[in-house]
Image (tube, rainbow, N blue to C red; front, side, top):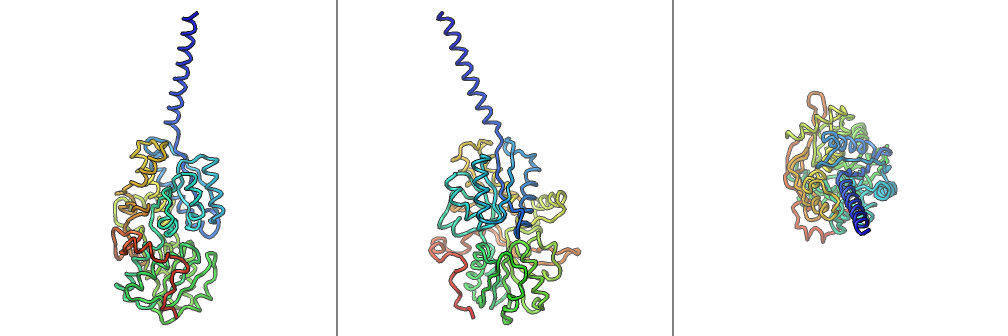
Length: 416
């Protein structure tokens, strides 16, 4: 009888051990589920399409496998609005049980899901949203990492360049009336005025604007340049109407990264020629990694990649580097987060990138000018500025103690 019970016990223990081993093995082969927040409808849909091209290019090159783990990509459409972003994020976490999220496109979407991401403790890698004040500084969330810079980061470089290199003294600004537009304009104003320039007029247009006639009629004619801070197709609409009003031959145009991004530049004509912008990416970056990236996107999608495509591809690189450091074992959430924060990219289309203590990239900013080459409009690099942080040349402590960049950023005393 004792031998019988001993045999049964041995069998039970063996079964339990086998079950545990099977569960462990199952956990080891579980795919990493990546939630992807894009925009397929509304005025930002063109950028959303580029985001999808970026992540699909990245994963196809790796046969949907990262660090030995298969990848399950779950794509959702936020509609390009805060409510949709929050609802879809909750679905990804609670229904799809994703391990990491890439997205969203817009800054106001990222702000809307910030608290939920912190509560859910699911890492979010933002490939395009450039929120500065809330997500990267005063209200830092360690579960949010940024594959690209802040809205103000390239505009700091442009403001100084406009004042010191181009010699502009008086500038009027017009930008989309949402967070990305606000922070970018404020960053430009800060450095432009610190270097002797004057922002003499500030105009704000709605994100869904179609006709800029009333704004064009208001632009002061005695300025050296107009700063245009637009996203989506708004840069195309503004520049086309700016030219139709006869202003192109009289006033220079400066712009944010998305004003003449490659995604919309392909649909522009002579109205874009000469526009000077700043960004952490342009398709003309002359490196082997970027040339391979541009060719891959062109081969698959027949388009030249831009801001949104490269940012999303870079978000994939961040994730891959972290997973490689963990040998694919992303289940330890704390270790996963540490690995993400410790990423130091030395490869990719945008060049070297490392994160500062706030989870924001230190990267290269390119000053660009639209030119026509071989019959095609391109953003030609006219100056390269390496190792640019979100704080530009300012002391971080003093920067954080100053008024935040927003629509209500201290009104310039120079406004007329």
